[in-house]
Every structure is written in structure tokens, then in C-alpha cells.
Amino acid sequence: MSNRRKVENDDSLKQSGGSKQQRFVYQDDEVMEKPFDWGQMRRLGKYMMPYRKQMLPIIIITILLVTLTKLAIPLFITYAIDHALMEKNGKLLLIIIASMAAVYIIQCLASNYRIRYTSMIGQRVIHDLRHDLFSHIQSLSFRFFDKRPAGSVLVRVTNDINSLQDLFTNGVVNVLIDCIQLLGIVIILLMFNVKLGLAIMITVPLMFLVSTSLRKKIRRGWQDVRMKQSRINSHLNESIQGIKVTQAFTQEKENMQYFNEMNDVNRKSWDRASRLNQTFGPLIEITGAIGYCILFWYGATLVAAGDISIGVLVGFATYIGHFWEPINRLGQMYSQLLIAMASSERIFEFMDEQPTVQEKRKARTLPPIQGNIRLENIVFEYEPNRPALKGISLEVQSGQSIALVGHTGSGKSTIINLLCRFYDPVEGRVMIDGHDIRDVTVQSLRSQIGIVLQDTFIFSGTIRDNIRFGRLDATDEEVELAAKAVHAHDFIINLPNGYDTEVQERGSMLSMGQRQLLSFARALLADPRILILDEATASIDTETELKIQEAMKTLLAGRTSFIIAHRLSTIRHADNIVVLDHGRIMETGNHDELMKKQGIYHGLIQAQYKFLNEAVG
Image 1 (cartoon, rainbow, N blue to C red):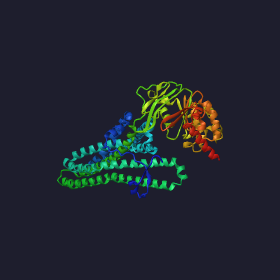
Image 2 (image 1 turned 60 degrees about the vertical axis):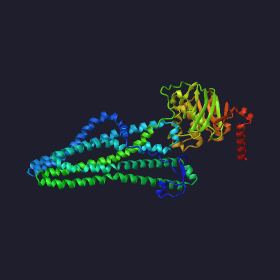
Image 3 (image 1 turned 90 degrees about the horizontal axis):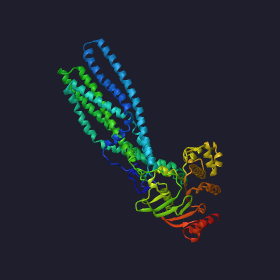
Image 4 (image 1 turned 120 degrees about the horizontal axis):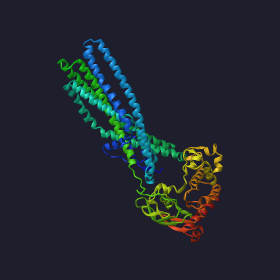
């Protein structure tokens, strides 16, 4: 399993009760040791800017209505006690009650409309952010995906962005409402009685001093949760794709044990973060209780002295209840902000990742090519100081078929990767029709290159759609002609719905050979000037291969082609055979010329014939 590493002990798994035996564990994403960065929040805020003209008028109006109505209720209560009840004025009491009912109705309508509208805008912001992230990920180079498991990428686009929904839908607006409400309450309390107001407010700095010490721990806690979830997603993705191997080697129990250990670690990580998160609630309640004690102790003294009325004291109590409520919400919002911070760091970590293969600022469009290719002293490294190609030079004329032969790891696929500009060479250059491919746009280059891989990827959808992926504007007739040319038509029409048969992800209902035939049809439909066949016939039976060989004569006619094959019988008619060994070209020539040399190629042919004879015998 490619994205695991073997270790003797894993402390995090041992905490969950895992055994001390050797096990495979995922490498966690790098822990980001950054302070709270408001720049991250500003970057998120930019996604709201396109909707500011729609948001601001409605949000301002609804915020004012909600805030003013909330602030007005305690005033009605104070006035009712001091004037209606104390003076036994029943008519005034009815008027106050009717006014309070009207205020509550206005508050309810404004709140409902605000929540519905901000939720709609928030979902648009999330849509834009997810679009930008996915678009950016698609633009990244192969090196980015080489060092990250698919599940780690998946969790950024799903879990991390989903965790921002509450922030964008209601969080920002609620913060504004709570801040305005707090300011209004403080002003009103000070207007009622400055001394009593200041006495109660003395608890606020104490609460903020205590809560500040929790900020770093809470942020780190949620960041750890995100990393553990990333590990689970990576393992799930790998387990699902490798289920056949798991079952074939009866490793279900070991796989389940490993998943349970990771799942337990994730649960404990969530519990730790949640405990820290929930600390804010009791902290606010304790602070609120201290405030009420101060109110009734000092407030009763002021009532007895005649400095304030009973109505004002009740109003104070009501406003304090309203005061600690937004404080509590702001504490929860801060926790939510820390969660969003952890997620935004991971999102923007990917957004800030730059492709290693980058177009020049003034890259030009590659014109229609003939297919003349020249590799000039190419040196390439997947990892520093470990060259995969060592000074490769090769010239290919338009229309020639070039076979790349060699042992595994000799550099065959690396040459193809450089030709398609999936990577850039460390030294040297790749020329097509006299154009350095680093001087042209990637899209104009790859649109004129067709590639058929050994591990053919079939998308969910119909057979017709999978073939049409080679050229999206192709007609149904062109799709069928391409399928007929590579002898895929016969098996397609025998499927339940022919070309409209739905295939699942990776084409699990099709045989490996059938998937290969679809990839041939897809490449033929694209009509590329350069065609690459990377072990493209490895999974096709001998009878089907003979049919494809005939089709290939038409497919390769007039095109420059590169063929990688371990089955050497498929490349004996190539115009030029290039034999590679440890990143160097050792021999070149056609089949007959190389056989006469009795070198590496001759040895490969003899070894393969010997193997086949022994297999038959």
C-alpha cells in the first residue's frame, strides 16, 4: 500500500489500545505551527465580497430590527413596573403588553428572513470556495499528487469546506448582532445607573483573561481532529480501491483492526477538542452568576437608598440575562472561528500550492503539429540526487513509431511523462516541431497528444460518454466508428443497452480487456498527432491483440507514436526500438538490427521466448 510506512510503534495508536506489533500507519499531514492569522479570515472574507451589494442593505435592516427589538423589551418591562403596576394603571399595562407583542412579531419576522437570506448567500460562498479549490487542485502537477494520498485531498474539498458552512451562513451576521446588542446593553445600563453598571462589568475582563489561555489549545485541538479525519479518509479511499487485494489475501481482519485503531484515535481527538470547546459555556455561566450576585447585593442597596427604582433593578436583571447570552454565543463563535481557522489553513495550504509545471507568462499556443520530436540531453529526477534519466537524447521523425523497451525502472514511462509535460526535466529540453514545449500552453500541447495507459480509467456514465471523453463534440456516429476500428463494437452491442449501458466507477462490470478496448476507441476518437501506448495491450488476450494489431495499422498511420510494451511481440514492427537501462539509452534500431547486435534487446527476446516455451511446456 503505497501511502503507508512501516514503523515499530505508533504512540497515537497505542493510546487507543492497539497492539505493539509492527503495523502500517499513515503519515499525518504536516502540523502547521502558525499563530492565529486574521489574514486567513480576510482571505475567506473576500469570497463574500461579490455578494456585498445583495447582502448589505437587507442584512443592515434586519440586524437593526432584531437588535432594536431585543433592546426594547427590557425597557417595556421597566416602564410597566414603574408606571403601570406601581400606579395601578391597567390601560397603560394593556398598551405596553400590545406593544411588546408587536415588537416580538417584528423580531420574529426579521430573524426568520435574515436566517433564510444569509443561509442562501452562505451556500453561494461555499459553492465558490469549493469551485476554486477543486479547480486549483486540477491545475496542480503530478508531483503534488505523488506525495499525497487521495483521501487527504478529498477531505479538503469535503470536510474542511463543510466545516466553514456555519461561519458563512449565520456566523458572521450573528457576531455583528451580538456585538451591537452588547454595545446597546452597556449604554443602556450605564444610562440607568453608572455605578451599578460598572460594578457588573468588572466581571467581563476576568472572563476574557481566563478564556484567552484556552485559545491556542482549542485551535490545536481542532487542527488535530482535521488531521485524524484526513487519515481515515485516506485509509477508506485506499481500502475501497484495494478491496480485491485485501480479500484475495484474506487481510480483512487486519484491515478492520487498523481502521478501528484509527477510528478510536479520531474519536479521542474529537473528545479532547470538544472538551476544550465546551469550557466556554461553564466559564460564561460562572461569570454570569458572579454578575447576578453583584447586581442583587449592590442593586438592593441602591433601591433601599432610593437611587434606583424596582423597575430599573428588574430591567438590570433582564439586560444582564441578555448580556451574557451574546457573550456566550461569542465564546461559541470564537470556538467556531478556531475550527474554521484550522480548516482554512488546510484549504489555503492547497490553494497556495503552485504547480511545478508552470506556463510562462507569454506562453504561446502550439500550432497544429506534424509530430517531429527531439529530446536534447534530458536529465530528470523524481527525488533529489536520484536521476531517473541521465542525459537522454533522441530524435523522432513525423509518422515514426518508436518502441521503448527495458526493465522496470529503466525510464520508459518517464520519457512519456516529460513528453506530455506532466513533469519538467532538470536539464535539457523537449522539442516538438522545433518548439520547446515549455514555451507553449499546456492545453495546446496535450490536446495534440493521445495516451492509452495499462490501467485504464473508466468514469461513471455510459459507454458512449466514456469513448466521447476523447473528444466531447464527437457525434454518435463518430463514437461508433472509433469503437468499430478497434474491435470494441462487437462486445458493446452485446451489453444490455449497447452504447447507452451505464458503467460504474472504474468500469467494474467490464473485463480488463474490454476497458482497454474502450481506451483505444477514446484515443482514436481524439485523433491526436502524437499517440502514446503505455503497456496498452498488456491486459488483452492473444486473439483480441491480433485484432488490435490490424486496427493499429490504421490508428498509427501518419502519426508519431511511442509504444511501451513488455510483450515484445507487439513492438517488433516499430520503426525504431529504443532500449533503456537505468535511465540511459543503450541500443537503438529496428528489430532485425538489434537482433543482429545480440545485445540487451536480443537477451530480452531470448528470455521472453524461453519463458513462453516453459509456460507452454
